Amino acid sequence: MKTVRIAAAQTPEFRNDIDQALACLNDFSAQAETEGASLLCFPEAFLQGYLLDEAIARRVALNLSSPEFAAMLQRFPKTGPTIVVGMIEAADGRLFNTALVISQGALVGRYRKVHLLPGEKIFDAGRDQAVFEADGLRFGINICYDTNFPEAARRIADLGASLIVCPTNNMMPRPKAEIFRDVHNAVRGERCRETGLWLISSDVTGERDGRIAWGPTAVLSPEGRVAAQLPLEKPGLPVFDMPVVGPPVSD
Image (cartoon, rainbow, N blue to C red):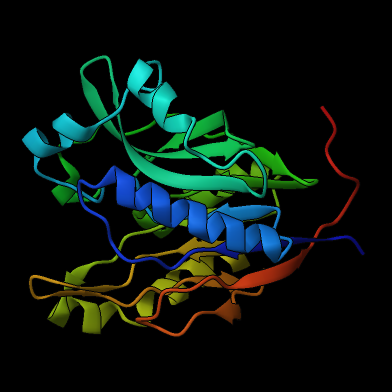
């Protein structure tokens, strides 16, 4: 059976520091390329940080048609795995919590978070779901809170994907983090069992202003079991050989 090596970065949190975020992204991408990974996921809103102050978010948001974004894209690796990475997107005066799909330094597509938390009022909700491909592996994207909604995973399954890629940011006040420490994988496992899909998640780690992020950064099987996971609180890059059923997708 064909397998595709997938990976997810558990990273420090970068806030309003695209230069440091891109340096981290390139380091992890180089490691993933050395490991033979075809797909690499980074956390939610990774490039600018998970920013919920509208004035700050608007200052750092990027329009995908802008010269600034084109210049930033030139700093992405030109070899190695297809990258899924979170960012704050500006379009038509609105803000979106977006995940980009980038391959060989070129923008392949995007997914805008559909299900928004009450604290994410600065963002507009996305409307569309797409399926992407890396080395014959078809995948769709759910961003963090999206995985609480069965229909979000079902849309990916209905489009013929076999993997949910899940950028997340769970930097929470410590008491809340304690409560949710084991909940994230449990909820995501339900989506896997309902759809028969694999899932890979990427999260930040570290502490800030009374908040802590433990992840998890993990791979879940279609049975909802943890197939691979990084230790909580430690940056790193788990890689996993995921089975792919059926022939590779061709253009």
